[in-house]
Length: 244
Image (cartoon, rainbow, N blue to C red; front, side, top):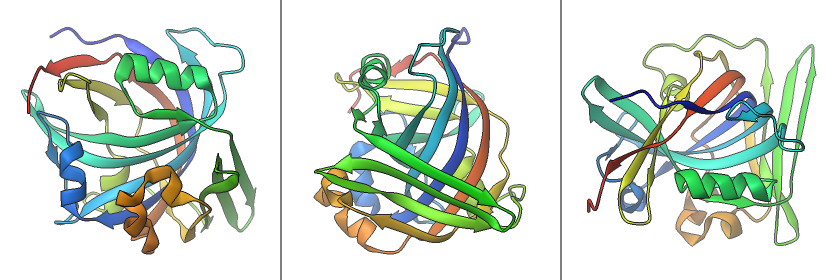
């Protein structure tokens, strides 16, 4: 199979990842055909991730007013057994961005669940550490996630929860006809901080629906911050037709 061409290049920076336990039964209806739910030590996890796109280019072209922006996504984890081995991947439940055009392109090409909303972020650093906050406007209320870090980032430990959360180089989406689309994401392994005092605020349940209200009512199981890096997102490939 021919390797797909790059579609998007960018820098992903200041990634804040809050992770929550969830009943696998909540996620199974969302698992794309041809993949299976990937558990961390027998536990199903969802992650709420805020980060910044910097120097974004689509097909090598920098689009004015669309080079730098925030994204917040809610995702979970799956695997697919391919000829070259097991592919660890993410599936997105909801992705928030501040630009209508970005959401439209992502829905049209990848069928990703994007939504355009007003957004803002705050990242502050000093000699002690950093504070990160990502917010979006939901029903007139600034809603979002925050945490802080101390000290220096560390390399990922093999087999650690931080490695499980961050080391995913594939994405899968379910198409309107039930088929599955696969795409690859390339970036180097990140150094991470274990984040402290992770918090959610605002109308979280309004954004993600009643099915996840009880998930976010509990404290985050873990939280990590990654400085980020350059990334390449490749064109999608259709894998499964009329499965399920």
